[in-house]
Image 1 (tube, rainbow, N blue to C red):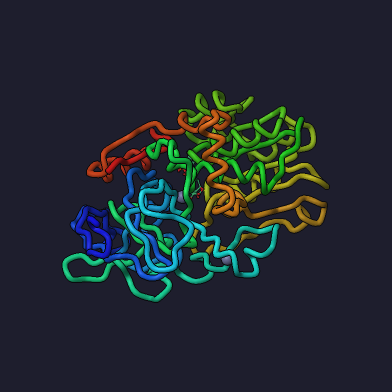
Image 2: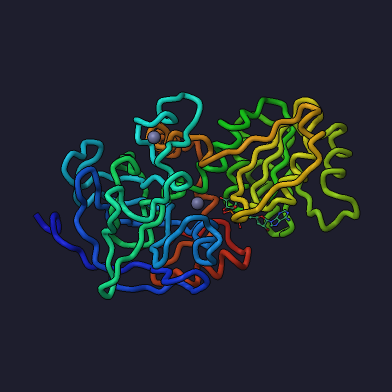
Length: 376
Ligand code: APR
Ligand code: ZN
Ligand code: ZN
C-alpha cells in the first residue's frame, strides 16, 4: 500500500555544520527496519535545545544532522516486530527512550533510560546506520527522532500512541517543553501545598514549571527573569510576583531571602546557566529547601559554590524531561489536556509553516516568543 517499504522524498531542515543556520532540503527517508517506525510529522515545536544544536553547544551531536525533538505525527509504516503502534496511529516521538529493559527502566524512581543520548549518542539508529540521505550524503539523526523532517524514522522505544482526537499542532509540546517544566515541579521537586517556590527563567519550560507549582498548590510562586516581557504570561499562569534581578543592587538570592524570611521551599533553575543555578540553590531555605536543575548546563562546564549550602541541609537535584517515564506518562498527559485539566495552548505564541523555520529561530532568539509550532 502507498509508500510502505519505499524510500520517501520529502522536506527536512538540515544543520550541515555547527554554527551555520538550517537549510531546507529534499531528503530521502528509508523505510523502517526491524523495531523501527516511520512517522509523518504534522507539527513540531522549536525548543532552546534545537538552538543549542545549531550553535554546536549540545553535547555529542554529529553533523550534518536533522534536529527537532518536540513533534507530533501519524505512523506511516512500521518495521518487523513493532507492536506498540500501527500505521495511522497518532503518536508523539520521545526524546528520552523508555526501552523497558535497562536497569533504569526497571526502577520505579528514575526515567533516565540507559539508551538516552547522554549515555550513548542517538545520532544513528541502533544498528549504527542512518535512514536519511541528502545529495548522496548520510545525514545524522538527532535524539533518534529528528522532527524537523516531514517523514522520520525512530526506534519503537521512542514513540508512543496518543488519543486519536488529540490536535497534533497543540500536543506536540508534550514531547519536550511542557512535560519537562511541569514534571520538574510535580515529580522531581514534589512541590507541597502552601509552599513558596522561585522559578528562574520564564521561557516555555519555566512557565510550565510555574503551572506545575500552581497545580501542586504552592501559595507563593516568584518568577525571575531578565526580560520583563515574560512577566504578564507568568502571572496569568500562576506566578504571584515577578522580579528582574537587574532592578536590585544586591544578589537576587538575598532579595529572595528577605522577601520570604528564610528562603524558598523550592527553587527551579530554568535558564541553563551556572550563575542562576548557584543563585537558585542559595535562595533555598536552610535545612530543607530543594533546588531543581532543569536548564541544560553549558557543555563541559564545572560548578563551584560554597559547600556549606549543602552541608546545612539544602538539596540540589537534577530533573531530566520532568522525571516522566515517557511511554507510560505522555499519553496520560495528553488525556489530561483533552479533558481540559492541562491548559497548555497558552504557551504557543506563534504557529508558522515549516518553510518559515528560520524566522522561528529568529523569534526564539529575540525573546518575543514562548513556544513556536511549525506545521508541515
Ligand atoms: N536570570 C533570569 N532569567 C534569565 C537569565 C538570567 N540571568 N538569562 C536568561 N534568562 C531568561 C530569558 O530571558 C528567558 O525568558 O531565561 C528564559 C529562558 O527561556 P527560553 O530561552 O525560552 O528557554 P526554554 O525553552 O524555556 O528552556 C530553558 O531548559 O530545556 C532547557 O535547553 C533548555 O536550558 C534551556 C532551559
Ligand atoms: Zn526540548
Ligand atoms: Zn531503558
